[in-house]
Image (cartoon, rainbow, N blue to C red; front, side, top):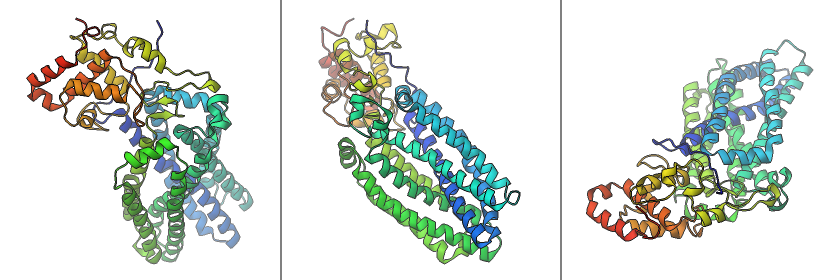
Length: 469
C-alpha cells in the first residue's frame, strides 16, 4: 500500500492553530524588526557622537540598548523558538520544505544572530571602557550582523510566497529559490518599517529623559526617522504588491476585505501624524504614550499586514508546492519531489494516511461523522477553525446549509477539481466527500434544530457502492 504519511495535525480548538502561530509571529516581528533597526540606528548615533563629541548620544544608546535586552532579545528569544515550535507542529512539511531548501542559509543566519547578541552586550557595557575607534567598530559590526539576519530571513519568507525564479522547480538550488523580485521588494519595505518600529519603541526610552534639551534632540531624531521610514514604507509596499504572483493578486482582489486598503492608509497616516506631533512638541512624549503607540502599531499595523500576507499566499504554505494542509501539490524535479494528488485520486485520501485509525479508512454509514471529522482535521484545520470561534470558522463558509448533498457537491466542485485558486486540490472520492459534508453540516446549529430535514438530505447524498455498513 502506498502512503502519503502526513503527520498528525495539531489543532487548537479555541482559535485554531494558525492563529496561535500568527499571534506569536506578529509579536516576534515587533521585537526582531525593532532590534535590527535599532542596531543600525546605534551605529549612526555612535558615529555622530564621536564626530561631534556628544557623549550624551552614547548614554542614549546605553539606555535604549538596556531596554532592548529585555524587549527584543529576551522576549524575542522566547517568541523566536515559539515560532519554530508552533509552526513545526502546525505545518511540519512546510518547515521541512524551508529547511531542505535553505539549511545553510539558516545556519548562516544563526551565526549572524550570535554576533548580534554578543554585540548588543558589548555596545552597552563597553561605553567608556574601550577607545572610541574600537567602540565604533563594535557598533558597525553589530549593525551589519543584525541587518544580515534580516537579509537571510526575508529571502526565506519570499520563498514561502513563491520561489525566486521558475527554474527552481526544475533545477533546484537555493539561489534560484532565494533571489527574486519579491525578495528585494520585501526587503526594502521591511527595512523601511523596521526603522518605523525602532522610532516608535525608542520613544519609550526618549520619553523618560529628564534633560529637556537632550530629550528634544533625541525625540526629533526619532520623529524624523519615523516620518521618513513610514512614508518610504508606504511607497515600497506598493512595489512589493506588484511583485506578488498572479495567484496572490487574485487573492488580494477577491479575498481581502474592502476596508483593508483604507485601513492601511489610515494606520500609516496615524503613525506619520504621531511622529509629526512629537517632532513639533517633543515635551509631549512620555513613556506611557509611547507604549500605547507601540501597542497600536502592533495591533492595527503589524497584525493586519501579517494576516493579509498569510492569506494571500493560500492555498500554499511554501514554495507554491506544499499546500497549507501539507499535501504536496506539484512535481518539483529539482528537489526530487513528486505530487501526491495522483495517489489521492487513485487510492482516496483516508486510506493513504498513516496516522488515520484503521476503523476510519473506509467510510461507512456508522463512522461517516467521525471519518468526516478526521478529514476536516487533516485537510481543513490549518486554515479553518472547526468551531464557531477562531480563524475562518468552517461552517460559516456554507451559509448555514444543512443539505449534505449540496455541501458534498460543492466540496467536489472546489476541492475535487482544483478550480478554486484559494483552495487546495484534494480530489475526495464520493464516500469521503459525503463524510466531510456530513461533518460540516453537523457544525451548523441549524442541523440540530431540523433533524428530519438533515436526515432526508443525508439520504440523498449516499452513494450505495461506496458507503457501506
